[in-house]
Image (cartoon, rainbow, N blue to C red; front, side, top):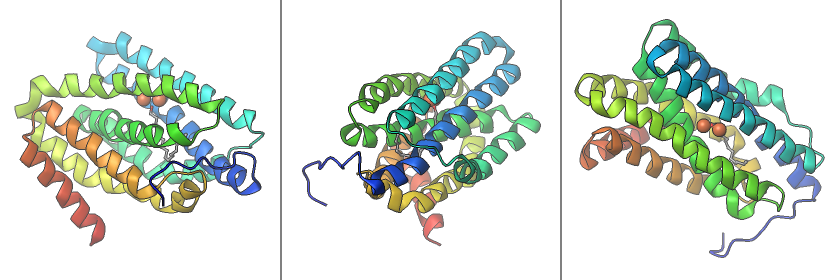
Length: 231
Ligand code: PL3
Ligand code: FE2
Ligand code: FE2
């Protein structure tokens, strides 16, 4: 890799093939985010209205990214994306069934949203001219989704801290393992997978600090995750 950003050829067969899988991941991820925010609206009645608005934004993101694939003439590989997202979605549903609002918020608002922020930040400089302004707009919305979760968890820090850590230990490795299968496709569309994981970790550490963990505790939580990912 050179340190100058080299834009991929957005019309090559290899690019379009890789994009069919990446585009599907994003569309499925946005669609699940829509469902998760609707479930959160039911679980947190005080904030139902806000959460419905966030859900609607996710539905719009899904449609916007459908447009990005269509603009390139790509058919998204949805079955693959659904199977890659299934374990994380299952964890969310399990937490929802158990009435564990903390875990639901950690999975959707911290983990999935940090993943989205990291992915879209890395995609922005290598995106085609149609997708770039759309991605920039979506990125602004994702920051709101992240701060909804942070703002709910922060005032309850003492009560939720242990649950946040426990949920991270289960769900972050599940999220990172989704990237494994996508590595070659990410490279083909011009994204360095290592840089993506780095962005995710940085974003996630910031969120942990935003809800009340000390810088050293949040670094420790993340390094334990890195260790378990290597084990
Ligand atoms: C929450 O609002 C949406 C969640 C979507 C998560 C997308 C994850 C995608 C994984 C790798 C894709 C990186 C490239 C992005 C290109 C548009
Ligand atoms: Fe989104
Ligand atoms: Fe989002």
